[in-house]
Each structure stands twice: as C-alpha cells, then as structure tokens.
Length: 470
Image (cartoon, rainbow, N blue to C red; front, side):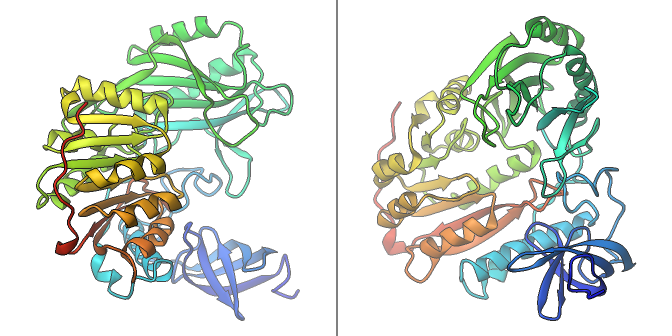
C-alpha cells in the first residue's frame, strides 16, 4: 500500500512538537502530525487524512522511545483531549513551553534572535497534578439512559466518560461520581447540543483552594428540572464545605459555556479565595485563574517590574474581579480597573471594599478598548490580561497613541502575544521588550501563560497623573 494514502503505514523519526503538543514527522517534504509521539522517537504510524498543509496520523508503535517519555498519570490520557502532554516528563514540558514562546516571538512577532535571551525559564508547578480549582464537564445521556460526564476526545465532540481527573484538586475530584449519580437518577433531560428540546448541558465545579469552599453550578438550557431545589438543599447537607448550588441558563445553541442568567438555588453563588494576602469573592459565572498557586506567582513578578516606577495611576485592563489590580493597589498604586462583564465588575468593587482598598481603586464596566482609549492618558503604568484572542486593534491603537511608561502584558497564548508585540515592540513600536516570563499555569496541557514586560525610553515617560478617586 502506498504509505502516502489514507491507511498507509510508515516508520520515521519525530522531529518536534506542534503548538498543541502533537509529534511532528517530516516525510518526503510533507508534514505529519502524530498525537502521543515525542521528539527524537522513532515511531510506526498509520496515515489518517490529509489537509492542505499536513497529514494527521496515529502512532501504532514507539520503536525507540524518548528518555523523556513517562507513563501518563491518568488512565484516560490517550483517549481524553483534556491533557495532551501527560506522557512527557514535567521538566521537559517546561522546556518545551519556553521554546514554544521563543518560536512564537521569532516567527510570528519577528522580534529577532535575541528573543532567546529575553525569555526566562518556565516557572514550574510542583508535580503538575491536582491543581485545577475549576472544572466544567459536558454532559450527555447514552442510549441506555446512563449519564456521561467528561472531556472531549481530541478533535471531536465525543465525551470520554470519567469519574476521576488527576489534574483537578482532589476536593473537586471527589464530587464528580456522586453528583453524576444523582443527576442520572433525576430523570432530567440532558441535551448539550439542544437537538431535542434542551436540558442539562454542563456540570460546573469551583473551589476556593485556601478556604476549602465548594460551589456547584448546573448549566442548562431551561429551568424545568423538577425537584432541583430540593436536591440542591440535600447536597448542601451532604457536603458541609459546599457553600452554594447555582443554575446557569444558557439557551443558545453555541459553544459559549455560560448564559446571562445565574440563579442561586441553595446557599450562595460565590466562594472565598485567599490570594496574595487578600480575600476574594469568586462567583459561579466570573473568571478566576484555574491554578491558584501559579497565578499567585505573577504578583511578585508584577511588583518587581514596577519597582522603579513611582506609584501613580495604573490601569488594569480586562481586570476581572480584581485578581491582580487589588494586590497592586495594596502595594501603593491607584488602580483603575476596566472590564466588560458586569458581574465581574460588581465583584471587583466588593473585593476592593472587603480588603479595605476601596479608596485606592475604581472599576468601570464597558468595552475595554473604548474605556482604555479614554483613560490611558492618565496612567503611568498599564497592565493588560486579555482573553486568548489578544488585544483588540483599537486597544493596540490606543496604547501606541499614548504609551504609558511601563506596559505589563499577561498572555495565555504565545501566538497572539507575539502578534501584538510586533506592533508594540517591533521596529515601529513605542516599546522595547525587556523580558518574558513563561509560567506553567496548565501542566499536562499545551498551554502556557506569559508575562511580558515592556518599557519606553526615558524620553518617552509621561508626566505623573492624579489618582482615579472612587
């Protein structure tokens, strides 16, 4: 059989990893992506399908294994798409993620070969297990009525049913099986794709790592779930650490997880988290970093980067519930937080008051790029923590037009970070890139967080600005 036809087999050496952790094989001028294969390994593979740019293949045998290969800590690792590099040792994961950042800065950002000197070693995360403080599990019923909950198989919408997940904090992990059992016995419709009238779509779990408080959120297309409030009350009695059960209504046939309405069925709709010496309320429907310990490592990095800037006004763009803005306010900055989500802004204000920082912070709700363009002329430093898609073009234009002295960019996607740094620190950008610190927020996966520090030249520093008030 011709090896370059679907179903064909061949043996070859793996040359590297793709951005999402698949092995890369080059054969007769063509690129093959092979999940589960590691750099340096000689593998036997079977071709599956071809796209314009590459083939996908499956590894049928590892003929010469990498010394960095290990037995995955999860028995479902080869089937589940939640973690793509569990078979790679922790130190090798961190090295690969650093190189991934360097490659993005050089190839996408075109920032030159000195990028390698600017990118620090990846900050690690212990053994990389039991770190997630949140899970959202898709739900479905099989033809026999049994409830499935789990993550998707790679490249599909087929659920890999699970009762345990080793990257979840054990206190969340212990809830999966009993909650699944109760939902299965409930008889409620489960229809995550909204093809048969709707029903339950996802099971959400949230933990305050330092407080131990738990929150359960069911996501459904409607609220017609008889007996739900009574069941929520029984859950609160069963688990004393469970402080609330919520129902989020998501009626739209989209991939957006949460809808606009969240109902508190029993208890309250938030957990307490102790973070960077402060106390936060984290809601059922608001964003908070999934790795509390690793997210906390960002705070001293920010403080060090701002050490030589006399405290003044700092804008915290995409501020969420004040995760990073409030520790900076506690360090002496006057913080203006801007965020699109109304629920997040409400919690940010409550968190500021809870920590006695209300007089040092102001939070505004609205389109971030528009608010940034209006306020940026008043700030000495700017911290941005945008979603995976990176900064909007209008936000980039506002920064370039009135660049603050220091720009701190926390990114969850090296590719969009590199794209934005082209405009901010490229040949015509107002900044020079001082450093990039990769941080492993998501061990066992292909994702990596980065903090980029950018500076203006001394002549470009803006004048001091007054505080934002309240």
